[in-house]
Image: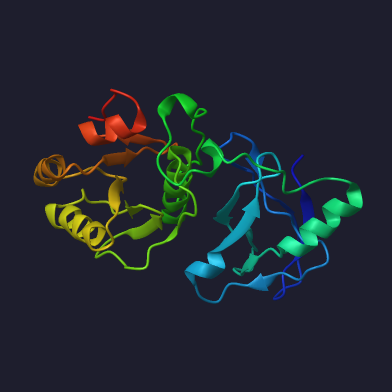
Length: 249
């Protein structure tokens, strides 16, 4: 059941009712951050990547993942971060209620750090894309769905878009209104080479003909994110990775 807490604006003192959104884990179970009813909401004065995400553990399979930090906007114009419980507080609460938030896991498919076989994957569930952050969230979900664990912000910032990384892979999320260019694809490939990793590209508006041709030559999987947050394979490497022969136009 979704958790709802009162949130008071620190500027105008209006009280809001906030319900934590649930996101799908790679196992298919809904995951939502545990809200702190006794915490105080804080205004967002400037954006920092680390502050926009919070670590949440799935209570069904035990996976830990980075999810968007809860926020709510007030009619006075202030955007507030909703307080969440830290891992220790969650564990103490679960102990008190007799629930186990960190079940034992097998050392099989759930812990692998490389792409999973298509037959072992549940259906992919994403988030509707309304903002650039939604596009990043959808891509992070898809990388986890493919079997990559520990998805995080990439160490090297790409020339355009936002970089994500996990063990053995770097990915570029491009929410721009223009198609990704040849230079974008080549820069991603060079970054992957320096880190001895595979690479994937996710774009909201597609790719130029030169970019697609170069990606095919280099074996880079290209995806287009539709507004439902579902990545659609654009070329053969992407189709093979996703385990489907469907291609985006």
